[in-house]
Amino acid sequence: MSDTPDLSFLDAPGLLAAFVEENRPRAHGAGLDPYEYTRVTAPLTSLRDWPAACRAAGHRYTEAADRAAAEGRTVTAGSSHRAAARWFHAAGLLPHPDRAAAARTAAEADGAMRRALALLDPDAERVEGEGFAGWLRRPATAAGGRFPVVVVVPGMDSGKEEFHAVAEALLARGLAVLAIDGPGQGVLATTSAPEPDYHRVVGRALDALDALDALGAGSRLDLARTAVIGLSLGGYYAATAAAHEPRIRAAALVSGPYRLDWDALVPFVTATLAQRCGGLDAARAFVRRVDLTALAPAITTPLLVVEGGEDRIPGVTSATALVEQAPDAELLLVPHGNHLLGTALPDWLPATADWLTTRLTGHGTPGPGSPGGVGADRRRAVREPV
Image (tube, rainbow, N blue to C red):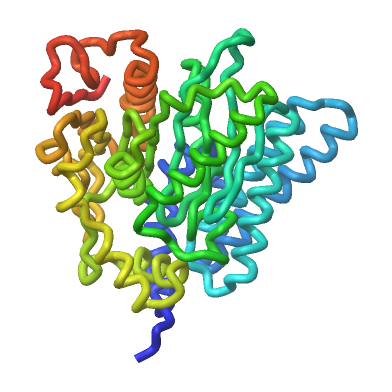
């Protein structure tokens, strides 16, 4: 039996249309214009054309950025590079057979984000080490203070270029943000395999921040107040960090899995994991490790579990079980939210950013019905649609 994933499902009738619609909210959540998303995806005749179409959109923005920069329009140039990074990232969502092309596209996303930050946030710093690479950004507040830090962790087919809205929400509330790619993610997707013991990755990233802080150079980080937010499979990674890494003071899990069942997973997921893990056997071994049953009682830090009521993925048991098993967990449920809640950004992102801010700074009190709010059950805070 071959250890190589079967990608014939990419040619299944109707899959193209389903994939485009399923990823529309995700594209919106990542900051892509919904009308442009339609223009880019409407001409596709095969799902195998997806990477080239998204990459072409990224190149159009790169060219626009170069023209704007040549004319001295710095903000436009930076914004265009940021849009290019988002499109290059979108190009890598498929388990495409050309892994060399996938590596080039991931590098383009990383490079576009580097150029965007150089123009829009020149104080951003590259932080990287064994098994991780990311960007540290600080809030635009008065000099002299020390900022708590939130580590943003992506998921199975994601990367640091996707969750701009999360980073901006945290920065706006006075928190520094370290958005990273870990093993098997983003710019590291084709050179390393996913790591079930992701707390080691987060630990090395925090060590790098500690070294940066020790050097001075105006880092202004308060590493005694550190949190992590993980999205999709990143929610599992964030849970492992909360359980094992003593420097983590709070954790938020967005659409994270509690457990995976290989036999029930859809071909898109198994093929993606097989490519990133280095084969089907390695992917099966990885999936067996994604199980929080034994770890849940060890997550004693404040924990927010964010779930969408419409998030139903075969083979994935949601992290809502943690609300009953972890000692200090709360649930933010958005009934109409899908996976990653791109259909419901106003219903979870501000409340989640507020929750993290309150846990790290002690400032602000979430309102009634929001996580930890007055009148809300600490273990089951449920938010209805607004």
